[in-house]
Amino acid sequence: MTLRLPLISALLAACLLGAAPASAQETFTIVIKDHRFNPAVLEVPAGKKIKLVVDNQDPSPEEFESHTLNREKIIPGNSKATIFIGPLKPGSYEVFGEFNQATAQGRIVAK
Image 1: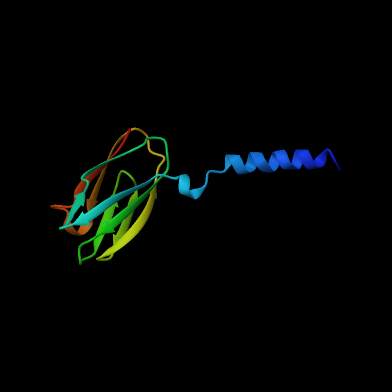
Image 2: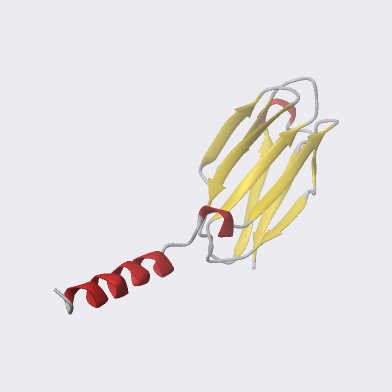
């Protein structure tokens, strides 16, 4: 019994240390205002899963879309949405607003 307790404690500690807390995930934000993305180019770390918050500050809805990221999400006016992406290979990923394609254009660049 005395040998099991240290072994169980060591295994438990290894499991806890190996699990990354949710708060350790990096969060990035893109704001939609006047049917434009800000920033228009967002740099994120390559090789890591990220949490992307899209903050639609316009009164009308927008559909955040990216064929290269395989994501699309309708965000109601004056609302936020969370989109998880990655881990991404180094490169540039086009994003756009489906409802305002002429102005809502951007890129996510993984470095």
